[in-house]
Image (cartoon, rainbow over all chains, first blue to last red; front, side, top):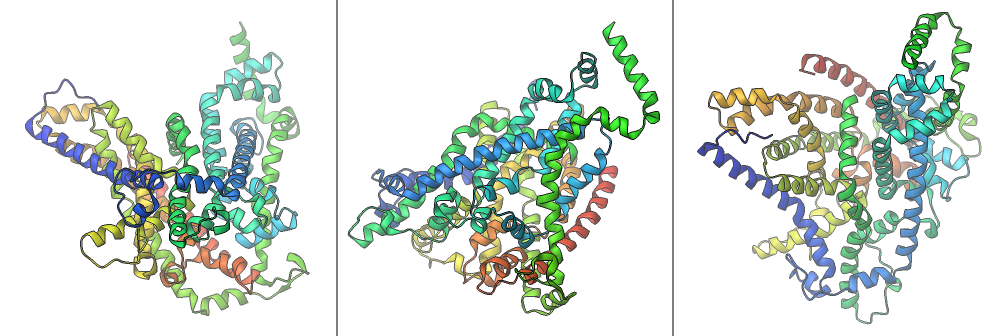
Length: 298
Length: 321
């Protein structure tokens, strides 16, 4: 809010000062753990273990990253995760548009029934075991389908896309197109999709983050390590503390191995967050748009 | 010319709509139904079929007999759960963690939003928003990894600080009494920025003339924040609170599961993690019992949600928007 024409009083200047102070505290509280992790990942293992790392890397080394690099499973799972994310994202966008556009049309008979059918699933679900039995029954256990298909469409995405179509695609456009002999398929392909860049970006990003971050489906549906997504490997290393020492290099001394193991964790946290952090500044506005469009309905 | 004819067609279609038989109306936009077909199939298969499959909660599920072929046992599994030792503990833990995170999560995003709203320096504002939103996108696994690293009894940052102060180090993850706080406060750290977006949106809708009038009357910025900005976001807060109450049984199950260890299980076992353990992760897997517990939760959750939505509708009518 700009009130530049208004002259500030002393009380206001105090307020401004306090305000910046509060924000700085917020900022540091959020930022510090992140900075610490990055610094620790570049530091000498013994410095991390003895708590010498505060703000900047101590005796910088790339040992942690080397260890990540040498860990075979991390790379194969990284590739898997990229595949799952891209495939899941494309599937989600296609399904969401295919569902949301017809539901946004006033002349679609039965749209309320379908909408109710969709929305009800956000309030009630069959639960873990019946879903598991379904995936098992479809023969998808231990295949990539078990990771990609169960999350193929988010009802919440359909709702926000539908709101978007309703508010941004004018009826006149459809009527004009219909007069020119354009059918619904062509209308979606040539007019709706090109006009819906922002909402498609929102859905693509949210579903990509969802697929990249998910681990639970992989945990219950996959057995083959070759199919594991990154998050599952991360779980073993970061949470279960299971680092297969043979996966690391032939370190002789146990102490050194312990140190590298710690370092590996910090490096892993950094590397696994890297793809997200790399694109985040550029796509941030779409995430915010997602919240905004979502709240319109809410 | 063209627009005129277009409106003609529309008004014609509008007046005749009721006269056209349903079949023709559906036929006219058959392509829309084709588009809709795959999503509907997906929903029916992946969402409704499991609901049908949830009937195993009332049966003794045997894999060889399948869902429909297994024998009905009525409410046996529900009664068993109700009388089990776990029942009270699970409900208590679930509600405690949920309510705690719901209440503790309210003030900070509001504070942050109010604060950001008064920053004039555009660059500082942008940077603050960017940095505070970022942790929201860290995955649960990495988030829990960070928590464990930070709280590590030997070389975690928190314990290094505690040791530096000359105090006794604490193995936080092994203490059941700390579990809910660790869960809640790490969640606030991760989501404070992102949750403030909606409040910022509400603040941008505040009528500037209110501020101008207040300045005329000699109100300081602090007073304006207290008496203009804060009241304008309270309706949003109330509605969010009401809506979130509807999901009170659905806490971040994936995060809880990752944060669990045998030492903190007393306070960290919640309904969802128990369902997973009984159904898929224990030596004696019991699909029917697990599904019964899950169904109990889903039904209670549905009732809560419907009740709460009614309440939210009322609140929305009473508030400004």
